Structure formats: C-alpha cells, structure tokens
Length: 315
Length: 275
Image (tube, rainbow over all chains, first blue to last red; front, side, top):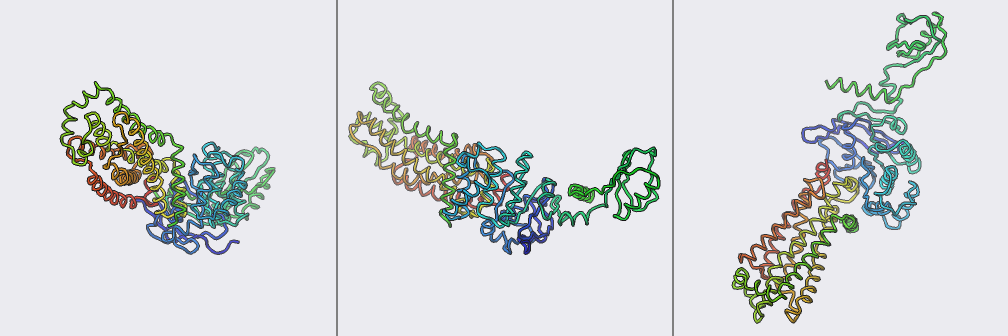
C-alpha cells in the first residue's frame, strides 16, 4: 500500500569541510514504493544513504524516517532499515551462513527466529547449496545475492540499495532486478535505490529523483518527468525513397529539430496536433508514407537534458 | 549495552584473525622463541662448564650481581655462580622481554580487527547495523584484549614448565616463577595489552591497512626495551613493588589512550577516514 511517508527530507545540506555534498535537498518517499535516486558518481547518493541511516549528522536541514530523527535515534532507525552497500562488504573468510548469523545477532534477532530466517533467505536467494562455504569462493553475482540477503534479513521496513548492479554481468543484473521486484511484491518493503544506471531506474522505480553535484534537479514518476521536462513529441516518419532531396516543412509551425535521413524524417513537434498537419503536407507532396511513429521519450533523454542544463547553469 | 552483540563482534573478529596467517604466525612463532629457544640456549650454555665460567666471569654480569636489589639477593643467596647466573638471566633480566608478548599479541589482533576491517571494506556494513558505537568499540577491544592476556598467561605457564624442567639438572629444584613475575604477568601484562589496543585504534583511524597499523603500533615495544635497558644498567630494578607501580602508570596511560580512542571511534569519523 502506497500512502504515508517512509522518508521525509527537508532542506537537507551536508558539507565535508569546504565541499558541499548535498545542497538544500527536499523530497519524501512513500511507504511501499521503489524510489530511485539517480545521478553520476559524486552526486551525493551514498552520502544521502549514510545521512538517512544516521551515520552522518547533517550540516543543516531535517530528516525523518517513519517520523524519527536518524541523528538522534540512529540505532532505532537502523533496526528498521537494511542497506546493500556499494561494495558488498561481506566477510570473505566467513561462510554465507556465518555472515548472516553475525548480522542477525547484531540486529538482536531472537536465535530461533534467526535460524529459520537464515534458511528462508538462503533459499530465496538460491544459496542453500553453498551456505557453509567461505564467501571468498563465491562469484560476484552470488556475493551480491548474499549481500541482498543480509540487507533483508531482519525484515527491514526500508531497503536501501546503493548501486546494486554496478559490478555485475547482464545475467546477474537481470537476476538482481527480478529479486528487487519480488522483494517489494513479497514483503511490501520500501526500496530506496541509488543508481547511475538509467535503465535500472526506468525498469524498477515508481518515482525518481535526479541529483547532480548535491542538487536536486528533478523529482517525480517517469510520466511526470516526461510531461514536465519533455522538450516535445519526437516523431519519426518513414517513406519510400524520394527524388526530393530537400524536404522542406518550413511552412508548418511547431516543428523543431528536423532531420532528413533520406527515406525517413525525424522531428520534434510541439504537441500531437502538429503530426496530422505534417502528414497532410507530405501527402500533398506525394511522398509515399510507410509509417508514422511517435518515439517514446526515455528517462535517459530527460536525464541527459537535465544534467546538460545543470552543467550549463553551473558555468 | 547488549553484551550478546559485544561478544558476537569479538567472536567474529577473533574468527577472522585466526584465518589470517599474518596474524597467527607471529602469535605462534614469537612466543616459541621466548619460551623455548632463548631459555634452552641459555641453559645449555650454563650446562657447559667452559662456557659457563666465561659467562659468569663477564665483568658486566659481575657488576649487575653486585648491584642486585634486596629481594633478588635473598633469592640467589646460597646459590653457586652458575645457578645464580641462571636465576639472574632467566628469572630476572629476561622478564621485560616477556612483556613484549602482550604488546605484540594485542597490536597484531587489534590491527586486524580495526584497520583490517577498513582495508577489506567490510566496516561499512558493520556501521549500518543497529549496534551502538560503544558496542562496536568494546567488541573489537575484547577481541584483542582477551586473547592477548590469555595467550600471555599460557606462554608464562609454558615458560615456567620449560624453565623448571630444563634447568632442573643445574638447580636441583623447582625455582620459577620468582616473586617479581607475578605483578608483571597479572598486572602489567593486561595493562600493556590495553596500551597496544588503544594505540592501534588511534593509529588505525589514520592508516588504511592492517600492516600499516601493526607496524606503527608495534613500536610500543620500545617501552619494553626501555625497561630492559633500565634493568641492565641498574637504573631500574623490576622488583614486585616497581612492577605494581609500573602497572599503575601504564593503566593511567591506558585510560588516557582509551578516552582518545573512543573519541576517534564513531561512525562519522570512521567513514571519513575510510576514503
């Protein structure tokens, strides 16, 4: 159920000496949603996770996790969160089971509950067969699955995932994506995903926040972002090869970025009403149209547009 | 304070230390040298009349013999020169050497526990756990303190057995431990273990690797070498009373170091120093 806030951040600023890692950032994350924090390296994603878990004290601004302040109640907050760190941070000299048992004990899980939960997690992440082998012998994908199991062990209400697939091959990445989706479906966890992989956010997240050098550039669902930041509707029209090399559409208002590729044109229309006008014009010029396709705007396009704007603004 | 968490951390760190050859090799080899090689070499030397006479006629030895403190003069009263030399060497002058053990044990394990965790980048997951800073700190301190003290005591027991057994043909009786060893082993050694840990925690907040931390903190051995030089030159006699006083001084230093170490051990600083 997506309703009240799991995380509320208001005017959050954090500095390391002179360097400002986060600047006046505000947003909230609803319970049960998958929220993605997008940004390049150094944007402030890991710093955000550390602040939200009470590992750093913010320079200014407020944070509330289920209404609690993590700076004052860090221990209580960390009982309700699970974190998958960017490096898996597993004890390689310990077995998978020993790793889970150790972190379960730190989370004060009662030992009989811990035993059954460890078995459940090992099974869920397909690690039972190698549960008693040293983690140092595991593949990257297995380590990542174990690190996810560790993060989920104490049934956290919020799961923080910091670059969960950054070091994985496509197969393992696919596997982790499926696991993240099933985690939410199974337990209704709130998932806070930090990633620089745009397709990952697009695939998994209900809402995204785009960060650059500590500043929040955009916030919303993909549909909302498309609506807000879409520079226009991109349309591609294919036709049979034409004699007319210079296809001019200058007389039509509301068209920009026209590209003629010989047997196709691509342009940005200010809205949908422009498309039939263009088609009529092409028909009038006796151009044999094969197809008219509106191109879906990807998060990637919006992201790079936002990052580019931020760079221009910084200059 | 949740002691289950504290002991879980201590257990985990000890388990990890046991798997690291760089940790357990010196813990195995150095005591063997002190417990077996050195005393047996000395006893063998004194068992050979020629070597023994050249040793006992050494002017430095004679000088030390002349300046012995009362408690030691009483112990060697009535012994022949070979027996007195043996008691003096292995029962008295050798004592500061033995103090190297708790420092070495504690610094090597603490380096693995504090700096090693940073080096392997496992500390972040630990910091995201609900354990408090105090529980984390105490768990890690205990993981070094308990084994350092216990292994020192076991080494002392082994030394006692080796000395009494190997020197029996010369001494004709069980003569070790001497009274000056008790405060050193049961009072000064734990204090030195703690000193090693405190120094290692502080050093670990500045360095990135297990070896870096161990090499820096192992320089505490200089304290022991100073004691040794003090004994040989006759500036300081490690009598039982001096041992007790020395322990007090080290425990006070431990208090100061621990206070500084606790201040350096919090999540914010640990993450900053990890970069």
